[in-house]
Image (cartoon, rainbow, N blue to C red; front, top):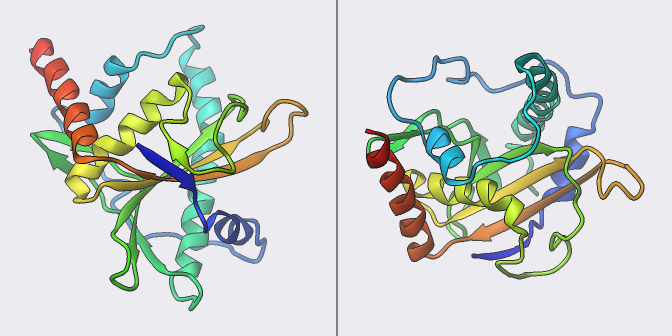
Length: 212
């Protein structure tokens, strides 16, 4: 997997921080009920189980509120950017998509206004973990620590039903590097090989077969 800092991070974050943007959002399938059947998120959690202390449901819900707020704000900002001449994408919620009978729920689909780039998912994350050790300023290959395997595999998984080999992972680090604990936002443009996407799906489908 190749990665490099996303060139449009500052432009999007600046728009998200614009306090004049109010009460706008996608008219969406967002509130649609989750379909029955097999979901990629279930398989990904088994492929990359999260260790650490278990939290009660009400604690998880409170942690999740911040992520939902960040996601909503990104939607509002993207909607206002759609018609800006210096913003090269149109953005919308793709809704639920499927591959190999597995349902996937990508965050936002970014479609270039010209044909020079291919569409990709914008994956939005809000994390309390540290940003230290991440390739925040340089291009590279496989430069993410193992604790990011879930997020990277999720991007590779959703690439298949979206018909692309690219994604952008945009992360709000609540406490930045924790030295000092100051918020940071970083984003990476990810490029997956066909083999990486295929191997990710092979692993998920193997888990699905074992669960039967």
